[in-house]
Image 1 (cartoon, protein in one colour):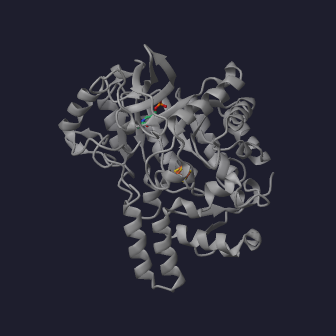
Image 2 (image 1 turned 90 degrees about the vertical axis):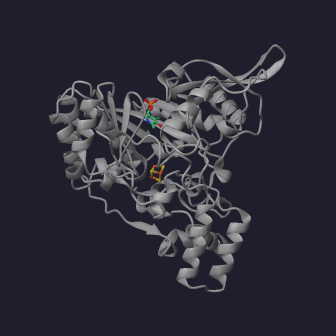
Image 3 (image 1 turned 135 degrees about the vertical axis):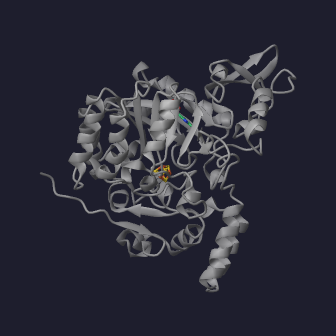
Length: 449
Ligand SMILES: *Cc1c(COP(=O)(O)O)cnc(C)c1O
Ligand code: SF4
């Protein structure tokens, strides 16, 4: 029996108590206070003791991944907040400024509230999203926070209380009714936040009715989580760890496949012994662990790092799945890597690894029309172009048709690309516009997932 590990968390009001903070220069601690007033901030003892290399802070990638950094705010936003703190402004004034700044960080990339919300008999099903034919996302209401917060997270507005948990649901009955009415759906993805913040008992209250409903179309249950990296004790020594693993095993016994969509952003996250033990225990239940991460400047924008990360994942029995492009929200200006450079990093990393790692796909943008992958740069009839394809599409028929954009070295997102060969629009745009006019108010920007 291993000793149990007590979860401890630090955020804005107590991070200065961390012993490791003593060696961090005061300017950096002040930056954390300034930026942490606007963007979410929470770390725990596993992140602090096992993941961050304090000798390398403040440049350490795991430190950047979890602690607010000065440049995550634009200079004028930083100045505004820093000035208020320096002159000891009162709480309300600081809050008002924080809200004002947050509203300028594209907190609700267009459509997140209006698209993808499924309906059943005319009623909107909050706490679910259904964008791609096969897969419904489900946001259990108790699973909408995380063991620590990633500074790049596109769900940041919900952690600072800007968007109420309008995506959260307690109603597994509605989910079941929706799956019954939609036999094309084969996958349910539990997501958050991090659903594995929930107790095994809470999680079972969703999973068990789903299994008991004996839905023939439901084949795969997925859980999106960062718990393996930020709190592997969830699967080892937490009081209900064994119950949690028993629940995973039960999914397999009832004939459904359980897939973990595990977030790992840096190879170091795979090093601690508890992480390795947790991976082993999860795999013993029959679940398969697939891995994904965005490409992030200051954290992992290096092909050797990705090659190393994928190789280690495969060694540990995990399957590399997606490399994403960082989304246009929050501190995107800090993390973003232009698409062409992202492709170069992907390609170089992919070339360095064997076939077992090449299950990974990317770089991919979860954009309004779908998941769009940049396949590469080509020259066609004297014109330099970007070749793209849909990995997932709002219309399944768009998937896997190559299409071309004008070469653009600066672009960081799909909406900055123009069609190649003097076409007026991309092949899917007319239809996308129609889909939009049918049920929504805006065409620009990107949606929630
Ligand atoms: C990525 C994603 C999925 C899952 O897509 P897969 O390619 O099947 O992993 C489902 N729904 C949304 C909204 C997504 O963004
Ligand atoms: S664990 Fe996932 S949901 Fe939570 S902060 Fe990190 S990226 Fe966001």
